[in-house]
Image (cartoon, rainbow, N blue to C red; front, top):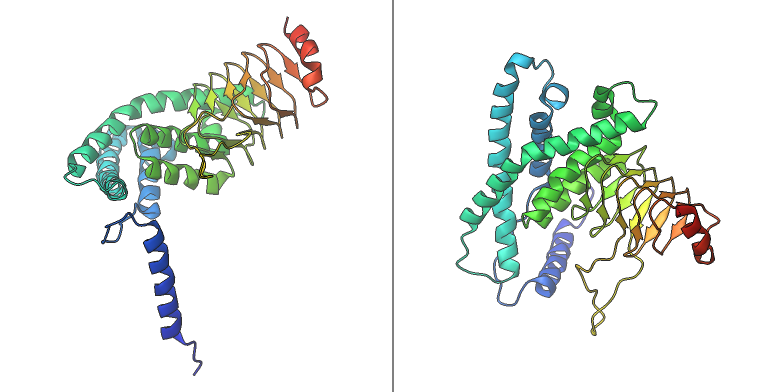
Length: 307
């Protein structure tokens, strides 16, 4: 019989875990942490898709006359499951900050109720995204095809839900929700990104949208577009400064073609069009057209194009 020296490996793994916990556990923190479950969050998001779009993303065979019954049952189940995960995240956060006497249960219930109340507005935003995809893609034969098949819409369903969680002070649940879509679609949208109505990601693979990006209404991106940070300021001790605005602002009706990279807190003005594979680190005026050959020295001609 093969001998794998299991006791020695188990002990070594134990030692490695203890070293990590000693380095990253707050001073005086003795107990282990409980973390939100990716599997539980994934199940909640699947239920919520059926709540938002019951006849398209709900259970097979659901009929219109049973729609409200299904939505009520699925919503109740999803929210109770979510409440448990919210309590876990808030408890984890309180432990990290060494807070005691916090009403985790009350905070979790308030946050979950606020999330539930936001679902009708999220549905309206998603309707605008579906319509933008249908109107913006000549290959789309119906809004149902868009909702069922387009990876950009799947990513936006997750993002609209994740952004709400992020705004309620639940960044870990929000990030899990976002990363579930990232894994399925190759579209990486940080839940902190603010995205207006009628957003369309065509094809989508390789799109990256950073945490502090701000996107207006009726914006269209193609595959492999990056809205990233140009540099990462640090504190005196060399650690990164977090939370600073560092990603682009896209005003209404902007179009960015495949492979373009926009870095830093730049502003792309209303109605501007950014060509494929452009590398951009400076502002673009409203209505401008920027092609790959354009550079900082061409700023005057870009201004003239916008006039």
